[in-house]
Image (cartoon, rainbow over all chains, first blue to last red; front, top):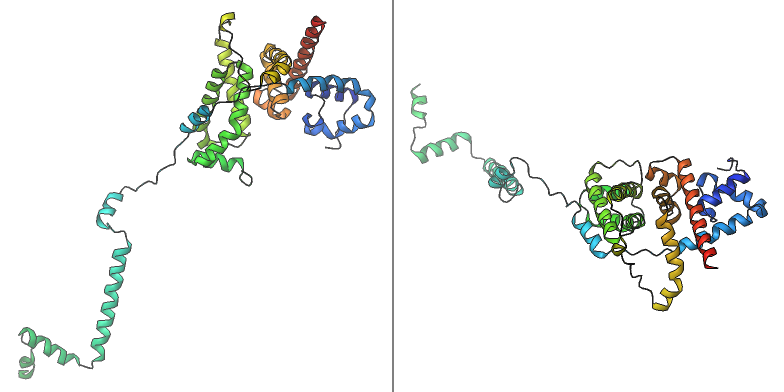
Length: 152
Length: 182
């Protein structure tokens, strides 16, 4: 910004267009123009006084405030929050898993644990396969095939 | 709203975030209203334009491209709406001149400032449309020359020409009035 060259005429233009306050001047020219203003104040005294008088008058502008009803109406017409969308099978899913997916998953885990515990308990009794089979067949009254094996 | 960029705010507002919407309205609605009021010189019409501007904003926000500040975009829309209304407006008859808005000042204060206020406001209102737009955006709303030029869809050079002519016209009008009083 400091390499911008501003002439006396340009500073006079800036005062005429943007007023006496350097803060209102274009960013790109402000620094160089303010430096020229400080270096040769006499060149700009009349123009600044003229512009300052108009700036003061512009500050007198009194406009009505927008009503509260206006902001309420504007906000009432604003977009509403987007609802979370259910997928196409959302209804079926809810029917199958009314309690959500955690309940079936918990039941599956419990079944697995029961199987493991039962299996381990059975194995740790030391009962052999044949005895267990025999007990099974005896219980249900089925031929264990022992007679057939003996005959053979 | 420090720490939240305007783009974040716009994105949230587009998704229905009420806080972001309220912040966007609170920050930008007054400037849109003032710009519209200066152009139309009528409160009800300025409010209509302001509401219409935000209706368009709500539709635009989901596809918002951060090319310009929201206030610049909103003032552009508001000015276009004002121009449309001014084009359609019939000449105002004397018995239709809108009443001055009550500023809420005490009688003695109002009396003291009335002349200066009336003087400058009537002079601003009498400016040609484009000069009034330039003065409103730059001198009265504090937009940068680049923002104001973008809002008005003119070059910075053209904006500066409009500003210079507006201020010259105001000074000439006020000087003529003062000379007449003496």
